[in-house]
Image (cartoon, rainbow, N blue to C red; front, side, top):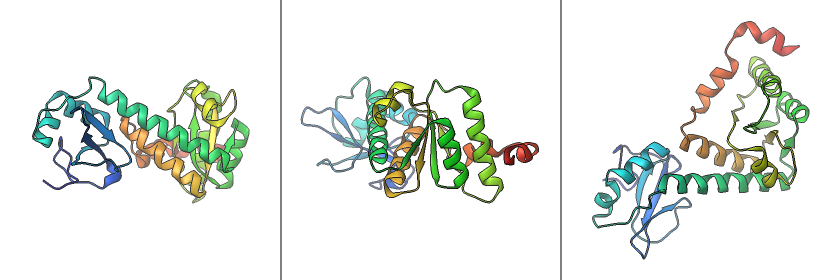
Length: 216
């Protein structure tokens, strides 16, 4: 088996599309998100349904060819680690000046073409989200980039990461720190079963009849 073949799907993939696992000293299966832990590893497609299946169906024991202890909450553990990494990268982007906060600033940043990612808190009101979505549609209509938007965190989580309160909408700018944050958000969204970016953007730009309104 190829070293980067998913032990569940049997399909090969790039490292960023997989999660590496190793066996710790206590024989427990440990997620290795940074891919730097010592020892022989195995790989699972980076979606929770595959991690849960690997844990439930004995795939780890077969991959490591030994008895291993699989944490009962392994899928949730990986989710927490991915979320922590995503929020950490978002905080670094904020410190680097690569994050705009507030509905008005986010909409302006999107329309200027400087944004590469939009985040909405889970509590975000539909009206505020709609206006920003219109800005994203308008950018694509004008030949600009397709800007993904995700609802991954609660308001309190975003506020803690960004050092503020009432953080409902945020835009990440196209800088090195911003691109690092985007990579983490995409990974978390994929793990949670979110739509691929292209499908998400197709949904965002659907309805050509709205294009004229969006550009107003």
